[in-house]
Image (cartoon, rainbow, N blue to C red; front, side, top):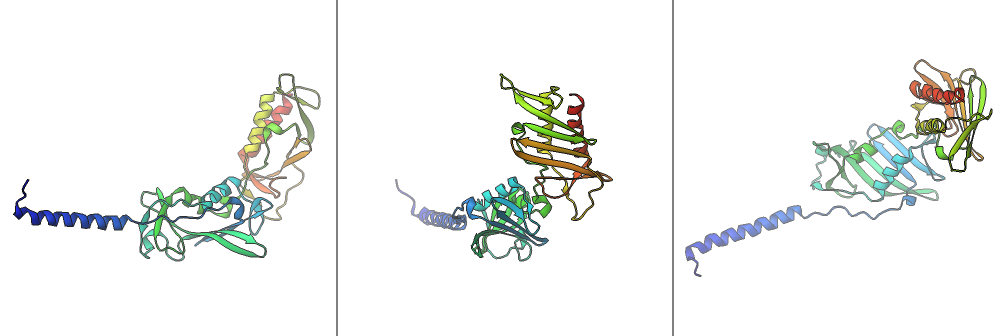
Length: 305
């Protein structure tokens, strides 16, 4: 097949231009997502979150994560999410390869500086550091970069929610930490009257709960009351030195063999209650509806025995 010589030049130009565009576009898209060396959870001893509005320091002490400087227990589920991300960050796309960070909330004094630190003897070594910026317009992604790379990348938006937190957000606000199925004895002190409830197991492996007067209780109601207490949270810690009032309103003591967990409501305030527990280790503020529900559920067990 013969090609008209007059068409050769246009065809050559088209081919040349097509090759140029292909090379140009390939060059523009040819970038590399940062490849992080995975860390092990045990390697991270300290997490620092430095925001424009303030800083948070979380540290591991005997396997328990706490907030400095008051040594308050941190929420385990939130710590685990942070550790999962820091161990191997998953960047998605590159959105900029310049040093103009203004459109991404990554300019100096605007980003959230996140550090994962390992404690070695008397020194601390940063093993991971990330700068977290704003969400994009769709609010589906957050902008992020590393200190040693000028490029801006995206990560899932939940990472922003995970690290843009206050100390209060990070507190473990569980009243008590226990497995309701493992409890075998409950002491309830209400209206200055103490009632003991013991669990046994029948031949069908069914839980039988009886009061100290040998009256059998509704086992389903006991289980429901324990589960409610296990899932209850307080609002915040009480100010240091706050007066507990005269006498206690309500106390629950839980046993698992020799293991003891105690929770006491100390006084009624205008719109909430003051309380403390063996798990929290400090006085805290309990929402009125939570306190009254706990009291009602356990009082009903005793009254219906």
